Image (cartoon, rainbow over all chains, first blue to last red; front, side):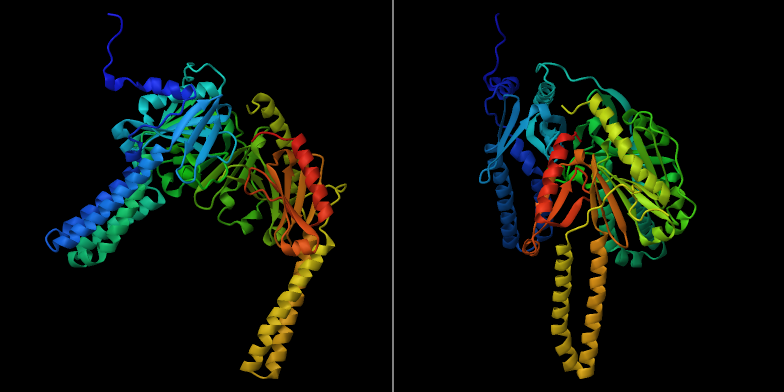
Length: 457
Length: 164
C-alpha cells in the first residue's frame, strides 16, 4: 500500500490551500465566512421576527405574514451582501507581502509587508466558534494602527498561517515554530464578576435591584407600575456588565519573546499579542469601591493613532486592560515584567497645592529614574501612570491663573497612546522650570539607550 | 521670580509672530465691531430711542476695544524658538503653555494658509508627533519665514528621526 486513499471531498486539503496562498496564488477565505459575518445581523433579525410573530400569531394573519416577509427580505439582503463580500475577497503572500483585496464597487487592495508585522491576533466570535472558524488580525508596526483582516479561516488553518506569517515577519524560515510563552497570571472568574458588580455601573445595577425588591416588599401594586422602565434599563446595564465580563473571562497573561500574550473571552475568544516595545504607558487604577477588596486595574496604552476603522473599535475606546482586576501584588508583578525596575520613590507637591486641587491633593505625587517617569493623581479613585522616558513625544508646561498666584505649574508628558498621559500636576514653579530644562535631556538619553538596544526593525 | 513661560534660559531668543497677524486680528475685530453696529443700532433704535442706540453703539465699541487689547496680548504671548534638538512653542495669556517638541519626534509637517491668511501673506506651520496632545502649532508666520521654518524642521527631523 503506497499511499492512504483520500476521499475526494478532502482533495483540496486545507494545508494545500494555505501553501498555495503562501506561494503567491490568490486564495478565498472560508466559504462559511459570509454566514458568520452576517451572523450577528441574522440573530438580531431572528429576535425581531420572534417578537413580531408572537403577539400577532392569534390576530391578523395577513399582516403578520407580510411583516415576516419583509424581515426575510432583509435577512436575504444581509446574507447576499456578506456573500458578495466573500466572493470578491482574496489573499495571497507574494515577495514577503501579504496582499488582501476586497470590495466589489470600491475595490481596496491592502499590502501588508510582513517585515513590518507587529503582531497577529486571533479572534473567534461566538458563531465562528460554532463552525470552527477564526479571524486573523494582522497588526502593522507603521501606519495608523490599521489591521489587516482575514475573516474567516478554519481554526487549524489560522494557527498554521499565523505561525508561518510570524516566522516570515522575523525573516525566519516558514516552519520555525512560534516562540514559547510562559504564563504569568490568570484572572479567576469569580473575582471578575464581583469586580464588575463593584464597578460604577455594577453598583447602579445593585441599587436598582434593591429598589425593585424594596418596592415589591412594600407594595407590589406600585412596584409593577414603577418598575417597568427600570427593569428595561437594568437589563441594558446588565448586558453591558455581561459583555465586559465575557470579554475578560478566563484572561491569561503570558510572556513570550515578542511581547505579552493575552487570551480571554467567554463567547468571543481572542488571543492578542502586545509587543513590549510598543507599550507607551501603563496606568494603574484603584476605584473607590475596590478598596474593600484591595483590587486594582492595570491598563496599557499602545501606539496607534486614532483610526475610524470599525475593527479597532474595541481597542480604540479604552486603553487595553492588561489586568481587568487583580491584587496590588499581581499588578506590581506585571508592571515589573513590562517596565523592569521602575522607581518606587515619589515626590509630593508643595503643601499650597491643596488650594488648587483640594480633592486631588492627597493623591498627587511624581517620581522618576533614568528610564521611567511615574505620576499619581485622581480625585476619588487613585490613578498611577508610568511612562518610559524614551516614549515621551513632547513635554508641555502649563500654568493657569490660580497656579500662577500659588507659584505652581503642571508639566504634561505626551505619549503616542490614546488615553494615558502623565501629568506632573501642581509642582512648585521653580521645580517645573528646572524640569523643563532637564526632562528633555533625560528623555534624549533614554531614547538613545533604548534605540541602541532594539532598533525598530 | 520664576519665568512666566517655564523656561529659564536667558540665552534663548524667542521669535514672535509676524506683525501682519496682529493687523489681521485687528481687522477681524473691526469687522466684528462693524457687524455688531449694523445689528445693534437699528434694533436699539426700533426698541427705544436715539439714546439707547447711542448707548448700545458705545457699548459695542467699548467691547471691541477690550477685545482688541486681549487679542494683542494673546498675539504677544506667542513665541517659538529653535534649539539644537527641539522646538519650543509658547502661547496663552491666562493659561500659559510652553511645549518642548524634539525634532526627532516629528511625524509630519503641515503648512496651511486659509484665504484670509493668504491675503495677508501668512501661513501656519504645525509639527505633528505621534501624540495627539502635542501642541506644536505656530500660526501667523510670514510666508517666507514659514517656508524657512518648514525646511529647517524637515531637515532636523530627518537627521534626528527615531522610531516610536
